[in-house]
Amino acid sequence: MTTTSQISFDSGALTSGQRRIALTAIGGYFVDGYDLLILGGALLAIRPEFDLTPGQVGLLTAAAFIGMAVGSPISGPLTDRFGRKPIFFTSMLLFVVGSLLTIAVPSLAPLILLRFVVGLAIGADMPPSAALVAEFIPRQRRGTFTGMGGVAWMLGGVLAIVVTLAIYLIAGNEDHWRWVLATGAIPALILLFLRHKTPESPYWLEARGRHEDAMAAWKYARGTEASSAPTHRPVSTYAPARLSVLFRRPFIWLLLCMAVYWGFNNLYGSAILLYQPTLITRIVSPQAYTALLFTGASTLVAAAVGTAVCLWLIESVGRRIVALSCLGMLILACLSMYWGIAVVPLVLIAFGVAIAVINGGTSIAFYAWAPELFPASIRGRAIGIVNMIGKLGSVLGTLALPTLYDAIGHGIFTVIAVAALINFAVVFVLAPETKGRSLDDLARGATRFSSST
Image 1: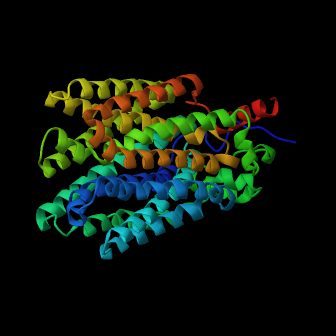
Image 2 (image 1 turned 60 degrees about the vertical axis):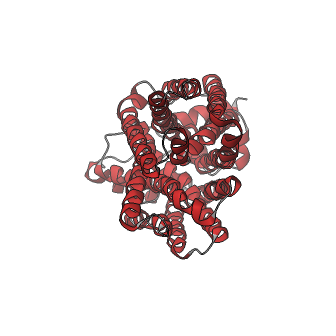
Image 3 (image 1 turned 90 degrees about the vertical axis):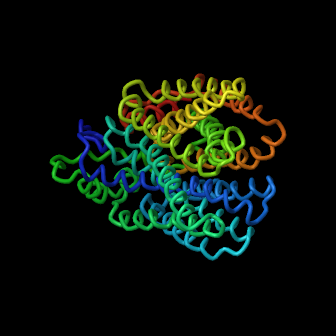
């Protein structure tokens, strides 16, 4: 007989223990942002040293995204089978090793291989990190903390720009890009140390019938506020499920919606952000450091916008409105860049708006959305598949943008506007709102719908 209680794993006020667990997971996004932007700055020195063609630049920048596209679908099933914590720890260890080996890289081929390894680690980190944040944070603050992954990503990018500038200004940029790339190991090592105390998710433990362990993990996170334990939840609803469940209604529609949304967001978002220094130098200035400063400033503005979205909008107006509004602004910004390409202030403002709404809006909506839409039994695999599609979008965007920009010039911004319009249509038609709802309610509702169709 199943008992009920008003106390659940995601009820109650936020505690310091839950905040600490969430921050160790969100730190993975910080490392991801740092790595991507550190490569953007390093490219300013790598390109002339190896005399790279546009195609080689695209392959180098796409290597990490290919690794992410491989790492996420591998990590997802492992996260659901073996737990969030072991994958959570191992992925960051692999990132540290890959980053440090960059110091000794002799040529382009091994550099591409190491970029793949680093991407593999980052991709593997997302399913367990997203699941842990969603499964430890109370429902009233869940959107804030899952969305803060996007802010952490941008802050990592800002720090990467600062570090790149500091190394180049002090030591020069001719032969120091290897050390620039290797600095990514520093925040990853700090994060690795902090993660070793993170408990396993109570949702995952409960799904395995390990009720006492689930209660212990929950009490560890709640600390002194764990006065009453949640009722033992029915295992039949949350027990391990086959992958085929994801391809039945309603999950197939949710999977399709998030895959298209994240795939398009990464298709143009990663390309714009990674090539931002190069694009800015071609549009408004020949000075590399000027471009890096602009990149850092625009990313910092995006982080401020993202913080505002996380703290107020994501929980008040919801994920859907944030996503649709930011997609609309992105379309207008891209069209403004195309029509006003000769007006430098307009291009810079529009470029800043594009960066802000992609990284401070649509990405944050995804981070808050994706873990909520799928129950604990398939959450890791769902996030792994969606993130794989997103990173394949990044691969396509980063491979295509250098060549496409050479071919059509600033017409690239109309292509991005069309892609954003398609994304807008998919979200408008398929995306549900999840703000304020408990993970239990969302999972039970989806299960009832699935069993009745």
